[in-house]
Amino acid sequence: QVQLVESGGGLVEPGGSLRLSCAASGIISRIDDMGWYRQAPGKQRELVAGITRDGTTNSGDSVKGRFTISRDNAKSTVYLQMNSLKPEDTAVYYCNAYVLTRAVWFTYWGQGTQVTVSS
Image (cartoon, rainbow, N blue to C red; front, side):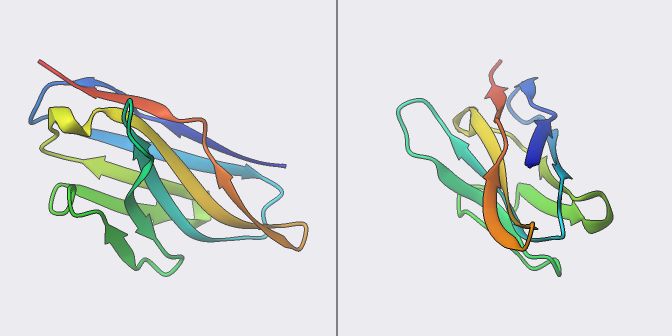
């Protein structure tokens, strides 16, 4: 069994910053791609940013230059540094990871953490 646990969400004013963390635990042989997605009320889940095992990143156009994804392979953890937050960044943020467990690859998702940007 593999679990992804997110932390770091909350309420922040426009222009502020938050740092999300997502730690993977369980029977893990290897983690390849990791990423962050978000889903706002009434909208589809969308990619925020992704990162490969060797650190290559990609991000959605709406967050380029404001959000930075990183990871610590030794801790099986992925981070999302969010700066210059806007009200439209309000959403539930989910992390995911492509994990090799018991000789099989699966994509796992975290339970989500709420980010609210409001004055």
